[in-house]
Each structure stands twice: as structure tokens, then as C-alpha cells.
Length: 265
Image (cartoon, rainbow, N blue to C red):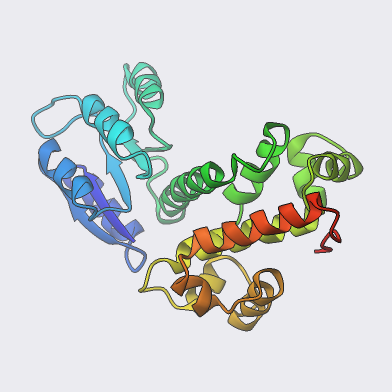
């Protein structure tokens, strides 16, 4: 993972380096145009940005440019507490930042890693949802979105139902009425779509992806991929990664709509 940080204050830089050590390649920027160049040339997977650059110029316009031109790039706002914090955070939230880290409060190793991971997951979910909008009714898109945004862990049907504020039987009925597989199968499909997105990075091994997504082992993930798609993970990677699994999911939905057997997951 490549992280570009427009953070100029020395203590903030030191905290970011410590928090992301061994997790990401971190590059600091002095100027907003330097940050934009990294984003434009596709050298960045996540952006961390302070509310102002070294010249005390607001970075709000840069956040807006990144969000408008490169919506797939997650942005984490890194700021201190002050009299204008609430107003500034609101402005940046409206501009499209994905998460917030408060300097001296949140910027410890685990919270900062979590913020960046969450930002990545939410953007990954958005890109996958765009691929599914044509076949998944709007009424159940929030269910799919939740499963995708939490694809790094093995959700249970009860957990998803609770997150949606419904009984698990209601969850079953909603997915069935929408022509989708069972809730447990939908959870598995979403995990596989997230896994396939990670597999698009040639530097990731199958074992690494399995570890990130909390599978018991690489073999466990391989078995799930094979069961649902009929392919091996290496074949998924060779055939487009996430889009390959999305295609298989669409095919499954089509089979259900045509009266095929409903998969049990």
C-alpha cells in the first residue's frame, strides 16, 4: 500500500511513520501540487492530508480536486484540536474525506491503521457497488454495501441483520424477494469480491490476502473461491480480479432469476 501524506509538522510525521511501519510505503509531500502529481500518476493508494500545508494554505481545494478527479482514492484527514476544528472538519467532510484522525488523540498505531484501512474498504465497496447497481435492486443495496465494507471479517447473518435493524428472517425475505442468494451466500460473495480486489495487486500473495480477510488459511480461501466461482484464485487474478468475481455473482443472480437452484452458503 502506498500512502502519500501532506503533513509537514515533524511530530505528526514521526507518528505517521511509526504507525505505518511495515504496513505501507509512506511518502511525505511539502506542497499540494506535489501531492496532486502523485495522485495523478497513480502512485498513491491512500492520501493523508492536514487541513493546511506548510505555507498555512487550506488543503480543502486539493481534497475537492482529488475527490472529483480520482474518486477511487481514499482520503484521511489528519488534524489537530483547536477553536475552528469542528467547522473545518465539517467542511472537509462535505468535500469528501473518508475518515478523520485527530493529532495527539487518534494517531497511535492501531487507530491510525484502522482509519486508513476503513477508508480503503469504503472506497473498495463503492467501486464494487457500481458494478452491481445494474443487477441488484436499490432496496437491498445497503445490505450489500455493509457486507462489502466489512469484508475483512467473517460476518454472521445475525450480525448483518442487526446492522440493518431487522430480524434475520426479514433479511432472508428481503434478499429472496430481490432475487438474490441466501444471506450467508451473499456475505461470502462479498468477501470474495473484496478478496479479488486485493488480488489485483500483483505484489500480494494468496496467503497475504487470506490473512487480511481473516480466513483461517490460504487453503480455506482457495476452497471458497473455487466453490463459488469455479476458479482458482490465480485464475481470478488472471481474469480481471474483482470484475471476474462480480461477473460470477451476476451469473448466479441470473440463474436464480431463471428458476435455478438457490445457492446455500
